Length: 160
View 1 (tube, rainbow, N blue to C red):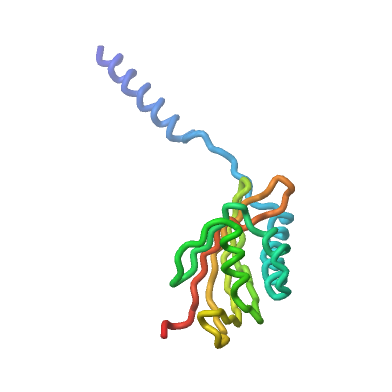
View 2: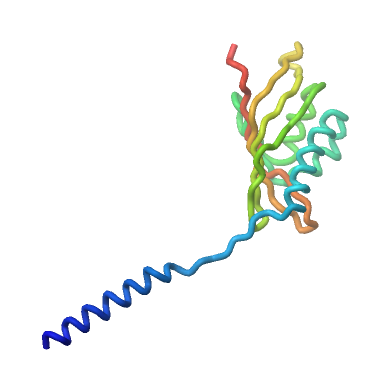
């Protein structure tokens, strides 16, 4: 009987140890291809260039239909048309965006970087030069291009 108990305990330990050794089923995840990273960079650059050119049709093509922005000291803006209205109402004379990190997989990506811009608005007629950081969430479209789904940015300038 003693040997049966030892055998049973040994078998249980062996099964548990084997399960731990093998571990849970692993799922392979694929990162972004070089083409995806290049397309995301192109999307960001297209936003910059179309903003500077006041080409709001081209600008709009870089944003998802349900896009939203989350900017410091502003309410969330939801929907591509509302986001376009908020950008179009600004007078942006200088604009640069530099992504430093682009990561993602399975049709979803993020880009983190810095921006600088010179801007005025109806509420703020004197031009202000701003710089800060951004975090974009992008989604891959069926045609292989990437669209901005969420844009979160905050200024490095101190509050007045």
